[in-house]
Length: 356
Image 1 (cartoon, one colour):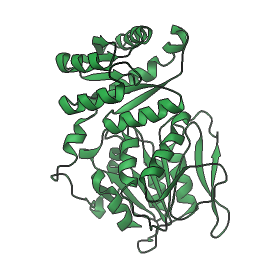
Image 2 (cartoon, one colour):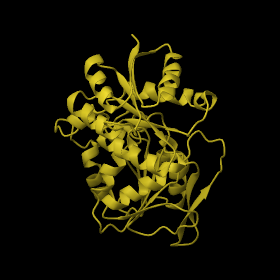
Image 3 (cartoon, helix red, strand yellow):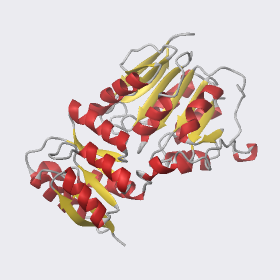
């Protein structure tokens, strides 16, 4: 059965182009288009789509207000289509806060040819968003039935080469993808401000978004959050957000000197930033003294990094299935038998404190 798609955008040009791209995929059917948020809300309630594409800047009712109203009346998976601007990034983060699952960054375009370049990404994201739990998590995450922290039996875990079980963790490496911005925000704003551990966070986001993301996190967290820059010295109690569009690594420069390296290597990497690249460098720089955390996301980026963290005597923590927007990355780690603990999103921050 085809997935029903509702398109909400105040631009007739964008509605037409998005419709063409969506309908080029046989698994989707466009059941309606809306010219503004008010009409989008009405059609969402009337047509009951499986997934919605949502513009942000619209007359009468903007995208953020529309998402909030839809989540209150009929929670539906939503993909935000946003411009690659500072204002667009901030609005997109607001939309994710209100319950949107993911976003598609678009350039300001002047022709249909420019827009068609994003067709594959749009279709891929729609498929993931349509399968996700979407705004339903906002209704179910507070339930206590799935709030237990699970410690997998030793027989299901890959053996460590050496044990550092009693050694203090000097760094926490966190990775996430689809649903990640909201999940990371929830975790970091619950951390106490007196932690003497460094944090590094990699989320699959474009370059235009990570600076705004870091600023938002800094306003919410008791710890200091900044977008990582090449040459930054890792300081205890600070959180460094990997910049989008490039790769982030941690380098050991001496006994107690650790710095961040930002580069374009490898240039052809599927993910920028790649969680595996970041976590692998953390495992090598801090053998036995790193905690790897994988939150919601599609695919298996982070699996190799988490494996090396654990293999070198570090610890691993993953988000449980019930609270994941997309149960891909955590599932890969769990199925590989390298998760030391599995916890619901609302308990991840507490477990980080316990494990470091």
